[in-house]
Image 1 (cartoon, one colour):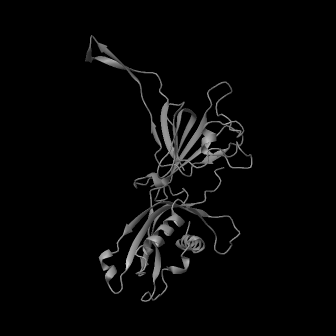
Image 2 (tube, chains in turn purple, cyan):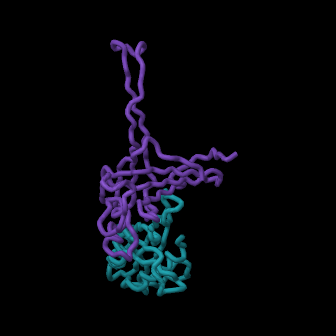
Image 3 (cartoon, rainbow over the protein chains, first blue to last red):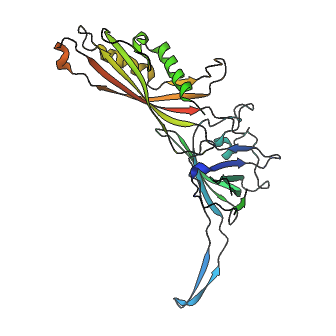
Length: 168
Length: 153
């Protein structure tokens, strides 16, 4: 059986961000908080018959993009943008900071997007899974100070109705 | 993964170089007679606490360090406080690089980042008239230990 019934938790995940370069630049978020959240919404049009649900019906509504968010401990804000010899940093990748050569995964003229790849390792080593969010654009990036660690919090959307999930 | 040995060596080496009363330090695991000592400091790393993190994340945890400062100096009833204040000044808000003991010239493999200190006077002043009064001040600090992150690319 290639299915494991063991519960997964934040220890089992890994978040990697890729851009549209060929080959893509990728960054493993090594200090994320393990709080990746995404929501797949379904829109429905309720057509009621003179206010009655019993006599009414539903229709499919517009597609809804996937809302997602995650946060990470803040280390260096600028790396490659400040010195090409330095490694790419989370902030500059998410912000497409000039000088770090981060390329959008969408066509020129469209909003700048990235690919987020979330891998969940099966603790039993049986059936790991990979969740890929395509065309992820930023809605907000919030930087905040904290006692234990400063934080970068990302919220955005993947321009697809659901991420693609595959077994690895 | 950082080892207890690497972290302990880094902290003790820093203490040895920076603490103004380093010669009064009684190191864990050593046998010392304090019966006739005028003052001494015992330096302990009491607790190692990991927090929830990804398996693939860099090694990161908290340690609790306690310096027990003792004095029998009857001429100076604040001698233990002097030891404690110096301990606080030595460690509070300090960042100590963790080196590789077998290769001192190699890049550091992590850091110990000390937070604010907390001092507790657990001496008993009324005992100062006693034949062998003992002052004791405890300096407690917590620190975050973080392994050096590999390049994100």
